[in-house]
Length: 322
Ligand code: NCD
Image (cartoon, rainbow, N blue to C red; front, side, top):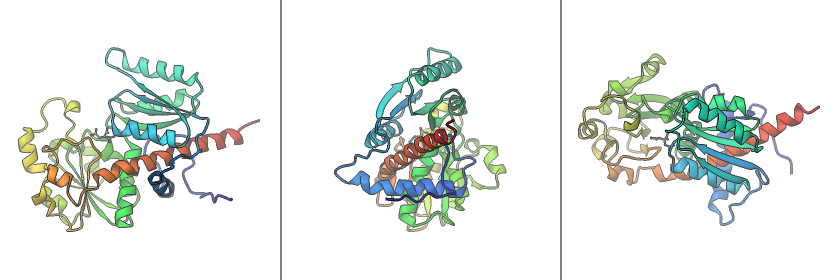
């Protein structure tokens, strides 16, 4: 069997962010992920793309769905997967990260998946190791596999990303999910609107020329996709929102506010959700919600990314061999 290689596709040995990826690179990753969806639904989910390889999941921050889906993805590809959950509070952050990376590198892993509370930490780590590195979330910076799984979910339902109106709502300031989604969706020519209280929308996004509004009514008007974000109280210094009840009143997505969007609008949330804070349980579990499907697409996307980065790393090692 011959495999056709897309010359403009994703050829990088790491996935550190969406920033800097071209449209063909993003589409390549989405196409590869799409091919994994059917495999993940059949009884035998096992593949051998990473057979004999070692994958380390290095999580300095708590995670449920991201860590478990990277673990499942690696196992479905046949890799040996080791999970390291690091309690970071008692040790100096910079030292821990580099020391840990160098130690793990000595065990010859093929890929390290990293989540860290500091923006830029994952890119720094990638410079210190000899294997592929995947960013599973760094501070408020990027969460590229989340943006890819969101895009895959949207594309499967709407058939395209181009020209869709996507309203990203809530705590944009602290959200790496919002940042990666904004970069990906604009690269694929969607129309992105940011909705939230002024205190939770960073100036940098206003400067990017995106539509910004403090009103859910204006922001959701004609939206095809309504993407809600968790109110990240653990990242807030000082009070940026008056109270949770007030927040729900103005920014919580309930049936009444969802009615401002298009009748066929779909609702997304990366999880974990604060039910009754940014989203009404009736909407989260309602017919327009894609939240459960996002989790399913997470595994398909992570299989694609693990296979892509490790394959690219090997290809470049072969090319540069003496
Ligand atoms: C997000 C994260 O950790 O960045 N969750 C996730 O990965 N699904 C969003 C969040 O924490 O609110």
